[in-house]
Image (tube, rainbow, N blue to C red; front, top):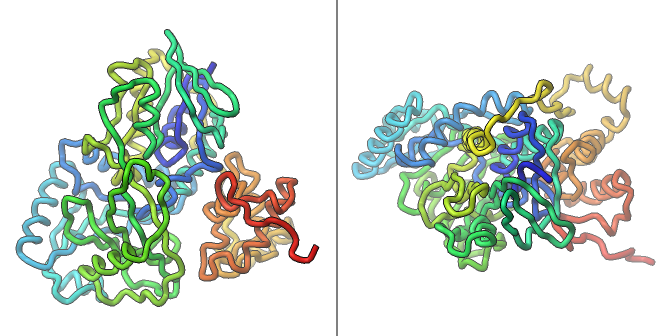
Length: 480
């Protein structure tokens, strides 16, 4: 019997697991995919928003500002790349300028630090590649960029190192409510827990329906598509650049990534309820991204694009984050509808859920040996020549470059496989240490990564997966 079962191992579920791991609780994370961070977390804008956009009296607004302030400490402890580069919301006319003033007033009420409306001339000095007709911008220096999947992976690792259990490929089929616990059913084995935390992303409403036939909310998928440009584009922009927002959201942005690429997107496309796995890109919507981005800049070098991708947002019927114990199912905590700025809010949401658990299960006791620090990842390319030589002498695997685009060594890949929430697939390794994330998109390093995975996991190469169940890369030898 577990005390807590967290269903969903994205940025929210793993952050909650990390917070709960400091207490003397028996906690488990249940994830339907083959890895943590496999849903919305792996495909979004990778932005830590300043927090001026959501209404000052909403969960989104409150948790965004609190969460933003926590990222420096969390990312330091978890060894996650994070840069506070600031954001600009640009305006082209007086009507949009009035919207900027409203955003600033809202942000000031929420306590967003150092918000400032700056002139078009100052915008152009900061970002020379933007449109000439921009008359002003809202500047928010506290905005940042991050690797969302790395945050989830790091939280999962740290939680596991502090005693949390993780079960992957655990697809919840049903939940049975008993007097003092829940029984969770899947194709593999049943799990019993006193409390359930529903962090299932776009599936949170379906999960809730397993214990409540008439849930108070629904979730529908909203798809966004992106272009990712080669690192050679360099400092095309130096801040996160937004258009003036509309009712559909913050709009198509242009931003650097924490790894040095340029990201353009997303669009906003509401999908049918049955399309909660539809992360394919489409020609017409990618064309829409280009059309929308022109409002920011008409100089995007799309010829330097190295890949396109799509992600889904969990759009709640309530219009706001749902973070509460069910009023009809005691012990069932919904953490649902966590769309943007969900990533920015993750640390604050996790702390709040921890407090909620403490209220329900009175008398939580902290562990004496809790360690909030994740074991650092060795990034070979960032070492000095002397450090590289010493490391190769100690472990020759660090002297073998597997991915030349990103300069990733065999030693880094082996370490990523054997960590507490280690990668087991080609994409899982890509998310952790970036082989295949460069210009060739795995065209050269992919087979080498598969060889290392097969060797370290002691399986045949034909059994190595690209991502989830059934995504086999190889079917046999070509010259058998």
